[in-house]
Length: 559
Image (cartoon, rainbow, N blue to C red; front, side, top):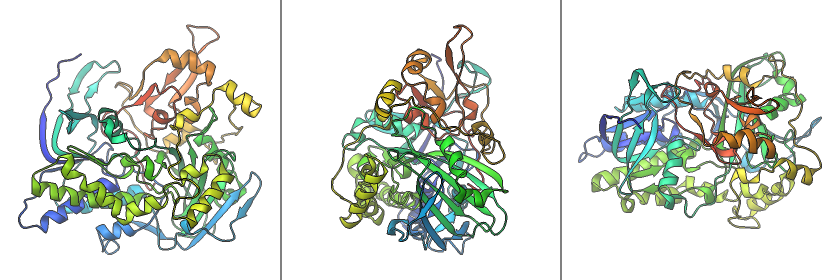
């Protein structure tokens, strides 16, 4: 273990993550302090691991403008990048060869008044508003370790730079700093590494919630010939290529008359060890409903991310001494509508209101910060999440029973036929190969598809379109606790599902030259798009995603 001297930086408010939640909190806090003549502006440090604000921001996305309108009422006049207002909605139930359009669109899927947006462009614009309010944003600064001292969250240690693959300092080595803060706000997105540490180091944060559930969403942005799509046209779908017992669905959004966002989201609670979100998405594009729109076009951008869909009962406690959790870090996503931008923004607003009171009281204890949870719970955002609290749990037994239960929830204010239905962690649903065969009568196997890299793309070709960059000579940020499990036990029992569920070809099974006739796991961390699927779906939980050097990973544009 190296004896490392680290610089210590002190600040009042440390915000980790420049997504909608973190940016909203910074903007609102600056506004509130400016309006209070008795307060001076506190020191605020807003950090983001992406190379620029928005580099790691990926979403479908159709945005409910309610949160943004509350934060910046004149957002349109200030030039918020809205691709198109939703003008047309449709929902289809897909089979491999057909599509049945819903004659009546369920109210939760009506999007009139919402906007098709590029999340990475939107967060870039929000960052401009934050900086105009006097708060600096430090892009490319990545948090590595959550500092907990005497039971209180004290800040964050940033990533060491300039280490070799084995952890040896190189000539350009720079030790990570200790950023000490009176309050640390984690807004680092889905299944963030610091948030995971918070839940491990402070068990009471997760003592009362159900396990979180996740989808992995895979998307591409296409330029298509004129006349194929209308700006603001929205298509959602259920069914194929997921099996009826699996959770999943897709979308196609008209960003303009010649630009579309298309994607497919797959539940990570699948029983199938060959569950492959990327492969399902490529098959999805081959459905005639979408091929008629995309064929002859050009794929421009690719991305993948996980989404927290467990809902209200899967949210952790939102506060601790010196800590707040906001946005996707706290599981604030409406699974029924698959929307979370407006909820994240609202969490930032109420977080700022809470911090303002804490500054006035000079108190950042749990007793002071707990008002954040009550503020959020009683806000329109908390009420929205409560009204959809059992949506994901409705699909525990598959698509058809899920649709029935979801319908019952619409008429019972979100309860349906059960309240707080228990469920397991996603990885616990995966069956071993022999269990799968005994239950379904066949070995698990990925569906056949041919990648031509013109219309359907293999994972490596898609990753190239994400702009992903990592320096090769650094420790792997995919930390495997026991390679023996991967190379032997997992091969035998599950068939190495990591090679399937990763949407970026990070995990590859290759021949082991030291063991003729055997295979081994080979990592390519430089492909990683930071989606966190591996950390969630690994059946043995021996994969841990940790933060690589700051500024690395995907560089999303127009996504």
